[in-house]
Figure 1 (cartoon, helix red, strand yellow):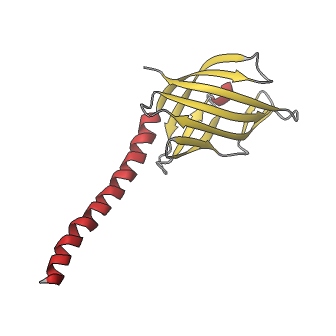
Figure 2: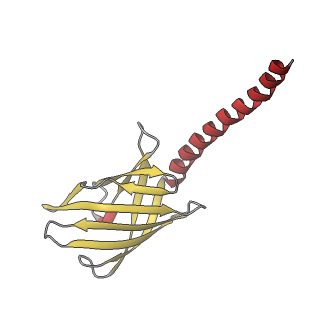
Length: 147
């Protein structure tokens, strides 16, 4: 009787743990889907731009990996250029070394991280971009969801 009692006690516990891990995976998928769409950018640049810029970006999901997003027009480099980001918890991490070309100039993403608001309506960013001149532009930006 003791083994049966233990069995009936452990099965619901085990199933609860399994369902919790499935919910976490689902939450990650929902996060990626919540980020997809058009965003307004308010950006503050240290060097390359005239201080503050406002423009739009488009975030799309990878069809192969739900934790990967593509950001078109990142740093206002045009919609033909997409920068790759990886979603983890409440953050988007940019892959360092990504290049984008605009009119024969090459821009390299040195580093970057965005923190996603809990309501998925804004993303606070800090990133660094090199235009090939040797000076690194330190940038902060806020993405706001376009309704």
